[in-house]
Length: 336
Image (tube, rainbow, N blue to C red):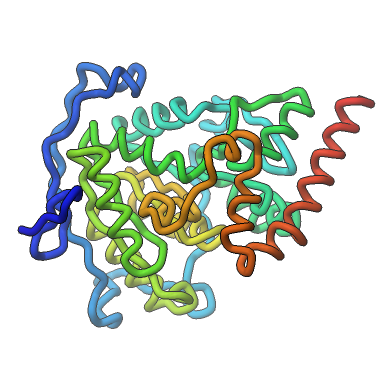
């Protein structure tokens, strides 16, 4: 076993070595934390099949050609679950008015019942895509929880008189849900980012939360979803690892289509479509200072950091959409 300075020990086979679980940090997890003990879960080594032809399990057919990632399948109890929650509709997207702590508590309570789910974090870019594509709208609506990752959506909800508590990003949830997973010994899986980034994110998460079980990490090659073999390799690796929480950082809608395809095989697992959160957690990409996050200027920080990649998305596509959204909401507030 080898260990780097300041990092969790890493076994010779590449698996992260985990320490004993921590105590509940000051009752962070509300009614689901203090005084509760979870049984240890064995960490599972994850590896993609060396031969794609070996990826398909007996009795399981690969995704059909031209549709490597199947469409989302409806869950029978979805309507019942939604009626139990009050959602706020902003820019055509139904948002759950929850705090980050409430999201974590909701997921933990479901995990204790053996139930999984899907968290989507709509921002301006996702809202713009949903407004133009009915299939993407259904994809977002099919998630168990939708929380606002974007201050324009928070501001729009306030203007409409249906405020949400605040912004909740995938970059925040990767830490808070991992903290809860460490306490309850629920193994997590990190999927996304360039090669090596998910591994580094796992090391940093374990450094922060000793006892966190990382059942696998993976960096799918570009275009993996275009072939049945590419999708099947990812599916096999995740199912074999058996995680209870999976962070999928492949960007919308790719990550959420993959989540929709995997949920039936892992019904007791929570999937979080988290965009760049894995890269943020790894330290490969810097996040904006907190004051910029709070004031809705994180997009500007990212634009200045990666102008070539983000200029069109932010300045040509998202900014006009956000301004129109806020203008419409203001008029509704003033004249309705």
